[in-house]
Amino acid sequence: MPENITRERLQRLVAAARGEEPADLVFRGGRVVNVFSRTVQRRDLAVSDGFVVGLGDYRGVKTIDVSDKFLVPGLMEGHLHLESSLLTPPALARAVLARGTSAVIADPHEIVNVHGLPGLDYMLAAAEGLPVDIFYLLSSCVPATRFETSGADLEAADLAPYADHPRILGLAEMMNFPGVVAGDPLVLDKLVAFWDRHVDGHAPLLGGKPLNAYLLAGPSTDHECLELPEAAEKLDAGMWIMIRQGTLAHNLADLLPLVTPATCRRCLLVSDDLHPDVIRTEGHLDRLVRLAVAGGLDPLVAIQMVTLNVAECFGLPRRGALAPGYLADVVVVDDLEHFQVERVWHRGRPAARGGRAVDFPETTPAYDLASMNVPPIKPDRFRLPSDASRAKVIGIVPDQLVTRKLVRAVRVEDGLVVSDPETDVLKLAVIERHTGRAGTGLGLVKGFGLKKGALGSTVAHDSHNIIVVGVTDEDMAAAANALRDMGGGLVAVDHGRVKASLPLPVAGLMSERPIG
Image 1 (cartoon, rainbow, N blue to C red):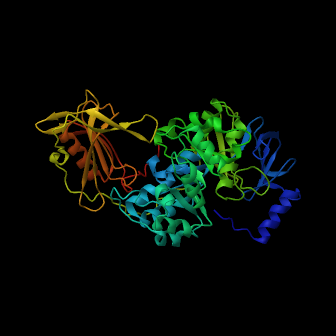
Image 2: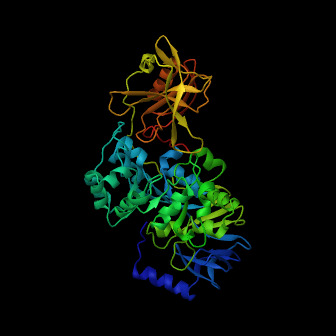
Image 3: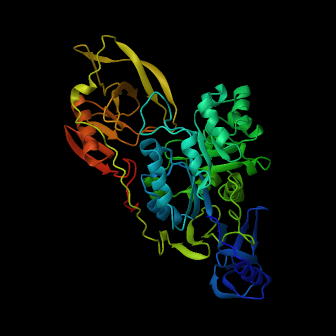
């Protein structure tokens, strides 16, 4: 967030930088990672009043011995849907802080598709006072598509009043790239409103002249590259390439060869969607650094891609480096290859140690984000009449967000399609939860591997209606009703009984409970 710098405060900082006044804190004997030159320098690091004041021979009111440890700038997440962690902003901040994260740029696309501007207001309020600086981009596609029903419909005029909020950096991923390329007036209105601000891109497999048209309109990043030639074309055209390695989408191995000494300053490592079990067991951006290094990347380049590159991509000054005048977000790691975070300081204050946040503020903003406007669901809602022996089926692609269009034999009984666990062709239903009309879409899916029962969720990109997949209509109805009764969340049902559930009372997307 913007710092309140007065002349008197700046005078004290300058005096500390000159060495005439002792610094508040000096880190002694460490190896400082310089992300400008991609070098490691054995120098003391001096900090005062939340800023790095200098490197070298400094006196300090307090000194900390970090001999032979590596000092790294606080890690910065360039693209995250915070809601996909199932954690509220305070709970997410507590979890990632211990992993060395000091700043997050998030797209509140999920909660805004459920609750509109009240959802955005909640996310802004929930980010206040945390030792992780959470910034947002304004969700550009609400609804994400006119083919489904969301809880809100936002146009340029709805977003404009938020443009100058100190936590708002610009416009979030412009998913409607066909609308941009075609010159859709409502889409272009949003881009005009944010013409001089950052605009995130989202344009999988787009190239050639359509890519030129898309970039001309404003988007400057892309986290949706699936193939190396695609990413290379976009980088050549001026885009920042966000190499995504989340829970579901794994693009790191395919795109890492893009990163060379000539291109690395235009590349970021991002998570996009990251589930809580991954954060708890593997980490956040520290995990991405380890994976990139294991894939052959220079550790200093990997660190640059989650620090300085992010700050420069989003125009965040005084962040992403350990240098005079930069915020004193300091991470201590054992070595740069294994990258195990030992301690974290946020603006010169102790923030985490030994994998746990310390003195973390307890902030729980009030909210009224109930979001299950659904009548009781009966099994006959899932009846799928057909006399055909074959049908179109959605094919799940492991580790990717895209799906395949399949045509498969289906099981038909008494003129109704039924799930067939033997061939892994199952019924899939989406039940609208926002308006009270509870419209239902039915289809078939292959790739779940479910042998019995049903699974249900209100985390269902992008409009986050109820989604249920199951072997029997009765279990699908039981799962949908369980979600309705608990106010949203995740559920597993077998023979009509709930076997496991996770309530997500904040918009049917998040829990206020800590990660554990």
